Length: 312
Image 1 (cartoon, rainbow, N blue to C red):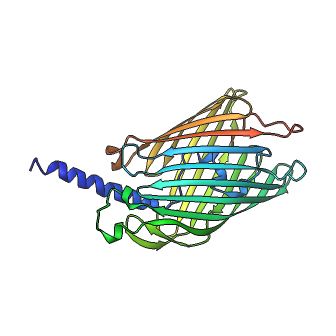
Image 2: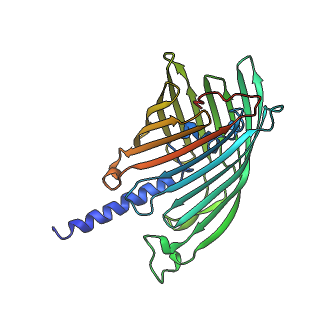
Image 3: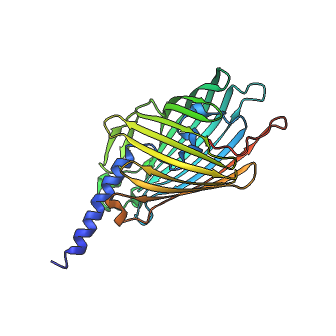
């Protein structure tokens, strides 16, 4: 009985991993620092900071599990010009690797904002681009030489993508809804080893900034993800901005993970952030958490001052 225990543990770990990867495959790439990476979630955010903004993010998920997701996201956007600030344009590129598969999302983003009253703006956003899928089964942990199912690689399969979003914002709060892709293209499910159709994803995002004192701001935020035929998932976070330099916070992804967040406003133009996720499911026995790093850089026209610091 003792000799079979390691084998049972091995297969139990494999079943947990497959379940986790299957759930992940039904979702768009996920982020803990979504409040600073909003363009990849909602195209209505395009140009809303009023300056040229560039973001770079790297996420390593479930450290210690072979084939676990790794994600890199880059976005850059700005108002069309200082005379047409109601029009925003931008580019977002995401590389998502899980097991033997790589998927690249490349989208152009456009938004048009209408002034709502004295303080608010409502932006209509569109995004369009391509998704490029590649699968190299020689990298897979289930690869077996001679297996026809696992020897037929997919090389740069291109599918179009079209998404849209609404984003309302003021100086103190924001809320938005979006669908990143209306095109239900076929994709290769590396867990079920079959071709499946994408499911529509719906995002709901929101946040508020409270002035607790002259030197302390508090920002709760939420991101809800709805996938047809799958359970609703939600991220909740609470960040404190201290002395307009240091950001400390915590987050909770429903029935999945708890998170710690840290951010530093290095200069008026430059912000760096880090988050760590700890799994609260049985998967925590087999991984050492998830790490996410991001940097944000902003450049404003000479005639405009950057809001210091931006909290969303």
